[in-house]
Structures are given as structure tokens and as C-alpha cells.
Length: 79
Image (cartoon, rainbow, N blue to C red; front, side, top):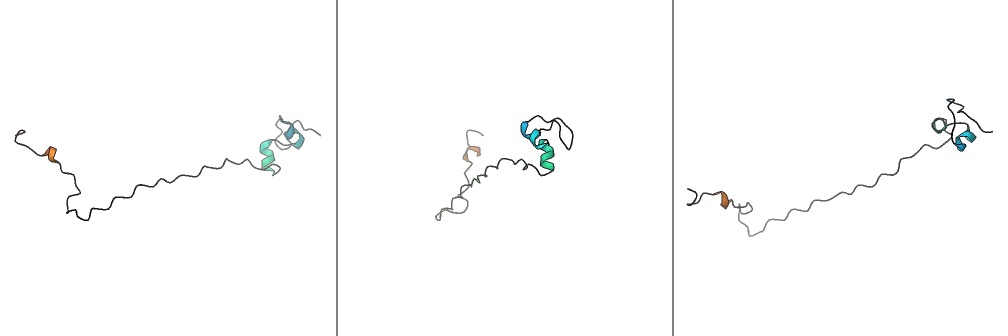
């Protein structure tokens, strides 16, 4: 028997499977007659690692890791 309207909400049924079942897609999910729609599986997140900091040179003196700002220092030409 083909149903023309949903037995639960009385809306018109358009697809042949809904007409054969007697319920629309939403009502069939509510009544447990049809499995719920599933979302597509999410892609796994890729964790990007930061590069490891370089260890200090064992022969370096304290303060040698900073870059000298020689271009900001006044010279005889700039005075």
C-alpha cells in the first residue's frame, strides 16, 4: 500500500520509499524507522611542531647571543 501523506504529520510524501514506509524522512527518524543521518567523519588534525631552539655555543661569552646594533650607534659623520 502506498501512502500519499505522512501518517504522523500529514505532509505530502514525495519519494517512493517514503510512500512505501508511510512516513516522511524526519518523522521516520523520530519514530526510529530510519537510521539517523550521520555527518561525514572529520579529517584528523595535523599537529605541526615548532623547530627546536638551537643550543648555545659552549665557547660563547654572555651577551654574545644578542645582535650588535652598530648601525644605530652614532658615528663621527652623524654628529
